[in-house]
Length: 177
Image 1 (cartoon, helix red, strand yellow):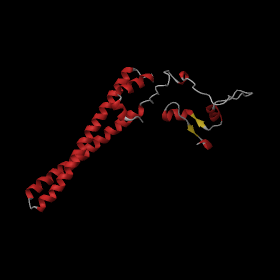
Image 2 (cartoon, rainbow, N blue to C red):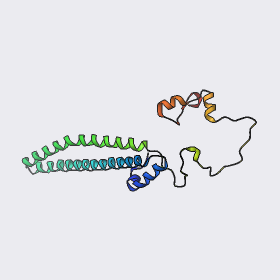
Image 3 (cartoon, rainbow, N blue to C red):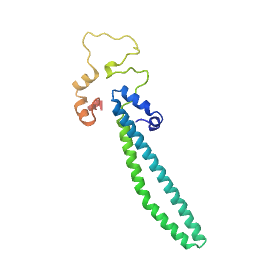
Image 4 (tube, one colour):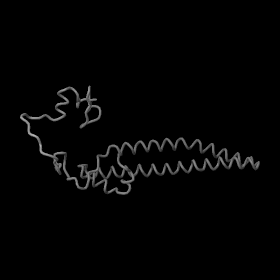
């Protein structure tokens, strides 16, 4: 998952990276704005929640002091304030949790950011081979890809994986699982 702090610090970097990943610029800008909006709401909600909790704790302490000094009127007012704060806290906690979930969902949907050194391209066919280790072996037959072997042996199920999670995933079966 992406780091929201990086997105907050480098919002235009996110847009540039998404455009390099073939995301239309308008969509990249909209996503950036959505993420920054959710982050701002999350931070504001957490700040408010922390302030309420701090006030509740301080008021609870003051209740003890008021009771010790026999100031029942002040203790009653503080107890009413604490009761009101206790009612407000769960709603704010639920709101913060909902915003966290929405933000995490959006962050998880963002494609990986390519390195600056990576060439731009539409798909993996535009990748550039940087280095080859060792000599490539030659065979007296046409070798199969690992996924062809896995499917032929009944150890890999791409169709089920596509239904479960989308493209480029596999369900491993039998000894391969």
